[in-house]
Length: 497
Image 1 (tube, rainbow, N blue to C red):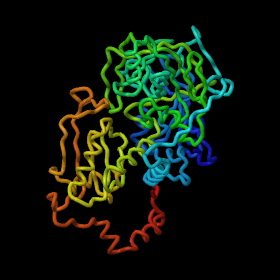
Image 2: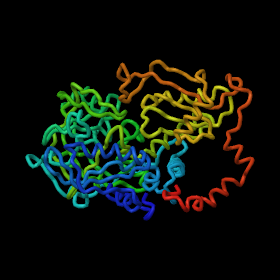
Image 3: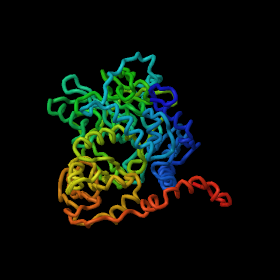
Image 4: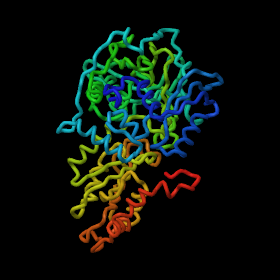
């Protein structure tokens, strides 16, 4: 929901306009990606602002393969909790990441039913004349996907990639799926399609193969509305469930969709591009390498799916969204975090918080109200059982700010003993962690950095933190400093903070 209007944000353009109105979008006239200028800029931007404070950015023109191409190309649109608050209708928005994290999670958890299910509203079909994604229709020899400003992010990548597309599959017997899978640009009318083993899109294609199908009809929505991209990039929907019904639930109104030109797949009408085609199910091609989410170069794949493009439709002057994988955060994360928190809160006694630090793939921090021996390790084991992301689980007391890496490390340094740990030598791990010796398998580690009780080998009593003692012994000290804060810095040339 848009905070200003109370209406859904219908398109990526609406969302970017809202970001720009808050001073959260940087416009750049041109960049030379032949020199990897945009990639280097993304690194510098996050290094200097931090991953949660860095603004989104838009580049009007990009040099690719010796030619200046019209964009715009946009990136880093979803890294900040205040930005997510804007997207999900939090009433009062400020720049405090901690407050906005809590406000967004509370807002979304309140939308879940007692079983943790999201509300559903089916999409509504609109005619092509009302669909901006149909403003330009290309078929046959008129198709040239290479002329658009897709980026090659890294010198080691196999080529340019469409890496923020929502891949739509639909089968009358097997069901439907929408997932975000990277697509290597292979020619004017050919792209790779990379669902990883175990992902819903991969499972659906394998079922079609086993049934004897030779082709799978597919459509890719590039830069759809933010809610659709959120649903395609997370596990909001189960296998065979219609992600677009969940999108409607998040929006509070039906998502407008339109029929594709070449198949009976319905796609978000407000998308920037729709790429339609066929995936041969009995032919494969090499794909990659590609810079992966852990920040390392992934391995090339000898055999992978590819798609022959049959139609491309797009807006006038379409926008390209790009993910700098392993660097920028490129999808709304709040619904997945909210759903996980709701689910784990029912399983883990005393759970008060759950947070995945930006830039630390595979690490998750949770906080609990510690009441009994073994509670910290037990909580960590529930989290570690998730096969997708969690390799290192850190459990802290509820007085530790889980969004403050310094506070978490201080808890490990001052409250943790190595004996309060569990090493899981090998278990399922789906994500492309470069340290894994075997695909789909990884060790995991649980750190119980809560105050250990005497029954757990901890001390008979724990000293109070110095800050807590200051607040108790001089209860007005912080109020005094807050009142005089600007006065302290009156003669200082920098900012007061």
